Every structure is written in structure tokens, then in C-alpha cells.
Length: 408
Image (cartoon, rainbow, N blue to C red):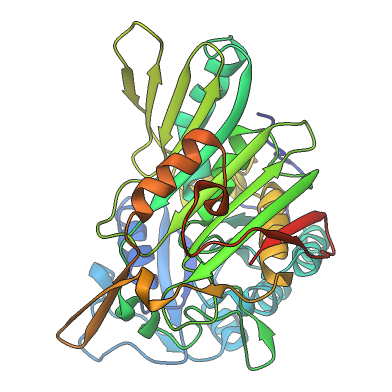
């Protein structure tokens, strides 16, 4: 796996060891997890939270997960000017990433930008150009790409532990209720107020499954040779909650990703590399690798993970290469663009769902979906090829970026 790490000269670089002033944009929802992750760095003197920016202010008694009271702003440009933040963390809806990133770069602030990077390939190109012109750094929040497990998998493949690689299959089965889609107006939307949102299972909750699979295939920066896509939904939303895709990388590797948010229970997502001599499974949320050889006991190892903010600070201060620059997410964004330009997901009929309602929250599960997800990863097949009663055979659909078939 080759990482496209760059060491171009930076503006706003510092060699001092004073805590770097940081602004968090998006303080509610997932922003809380960023506050918790930043607290050890603040205590260590690496960063200093100098403000938060959001359309909705924090509560008066909110201690911001231990950071204490800091200035609140509802406008990013104003916040950056008044705080002098050298680092900006953007935890905002997908369709706001590019315009807000542009403001931060114009104000001279380095960026940690939550995934997905942008809602289209065209916007990714604009972001890359803006970052390059600014001379500043932009790290994308695909945390799994900072895992040391990826390098270990790459080493085992290069050393021939698996033999010839036949393909890579990813499986993700999570339980998400109606509360997941009620948390924000853009949740589960394909577009909103004239903007592309692309908040589907493949492109947001399981974005790490797609991006990490592409990294393991050495295809994180390029376009696929071909891509087949199936998108379905059980929830009353615009986007997909149960989907599968199969692509062939430019190097010829077959890669599948089958995911659902309609499982009866959540399981750690897993990516399996199939070789003709052995198989290897990476549970990327756990940084855990299991190597399986015929006639031998499975061997499981757990690995460390680099903190993306620590890496960004080291990049700004010392020129250490960024782990996840925007160009490392181009392969993923090719998949996102195929999802964006595909027809709307096909509804899964009521007779193929089990619906449970409790205290105003609805959970929709698709019987047998967990087995289908894992069988897809094992056999490198799509839902329609596995005989799912709600799936449909393929019909060809044009796509702007690659040869794509959409199963509807």
C-alpha cells in the first residue's frame, strides 16, 4: 500500500512548543467526541481550545467535556479573526465542508476536516486546489487510516502470507433506530436545500469500511476500473441504509463492501482479504487482525493507532507527513460520486422487515441481513446474487466518473 504523503512547505508553521490555539466548529452531536479526544492533548499542552463555533450555542452550564468555558461564535470568519486559531476542526454537515474549509484556509488556519471529505469529486478537486494554494495543511478524519494494523496487513501481503490475493470483502452490520435519522435535518438525506448531502450507509457510517478496503487494495487515490452498486432502504429516508458494491481497482483487485444499518444487533465491521493460501480479517474499529491458515489455529494481533490531531500538530511543527491528506481520500470519493449520481435507493417492502417500536423510537431490521452481509464479504457477491428477496438484478446506469452498474 503506497500512501500519498506530501511534505510541501507550510505557511503558518511553528517550531515553538506552546499549545496551538484550536477552534472547534460543530460542538453538538459528533462534536462532543472531538471535545473528549482533544482533552488529553489540551492537558498535555499540545493544543488549547480557544473557542467553539456553531449555529446553536452550548448550554450555559456546559463545561465542554472538561475544557471549561470558552468563547462561543456563530460565524466562522469572525471566530477565526477573534481567536487567532491556528488549527480548526470542522465537524459539520457534509455539504458545508468545502465552503467552511475555504473560510478557514483564507484565515490562515490548518484543518482537521471530518469525513466524508466532500460530497462530490468536483468539490474534492476544489478543496485540494485551495489547500495547495494556501500552503496550509488539511487532515481528513478517517481515523482508521491512522491504524498501524494497515501497515501490518500490507507487510503480510507483500511477504506472501496470503499467497495470491483473490479479492477483498468488507462486511458491516449495525443497528440504528429512527433516532439516528432524527438527530439532524441532513441525516439520511441525499440532497437538501439544493445542496448535495449524500448521507448514506456507504458514504457516512460505513465510510471507513470503504476507505480502509481501498487502502488495503492500494487503491485509495485512483479511480476504479469498474463499479457495481446496489442501494436499498428500509427506513423512510432518501438515502441508502442497506447497500452493497463491487468494484475492480485499476490494478485488477476485486473488492466488495456490504453494509446495513438494519441489523438486529451491531457487530464490529470486518474486512477480509482472501488469498489462495490464507485469509486475513481486519476489524478496523478494534485495530485487530486475524490470520487464518488451513490446518492452523487462527492468529490474532491488536495494533496501535496514531491520533490524527497529534499527527497534524507534528506536521505543522516538524514537517512530519500527514497521514490522511485529501488526496488519500480520492478513491473513496469516486465511490461516493457513484452513490451520488445513482438512482434513489429501492425501498425494502414491509413484508421483508421486522419493525419494533419502543418509547417513540422505531427499529427496522431486515431478516437474515447479517448473514447476507457476511456471505457477501466471503464470496465477493452482491445482495441480488445471494437471492435476497428484496434485491433486484442489475441494469446499467451511466456514471460520470467510471463504468458503473446500479442494481435497483
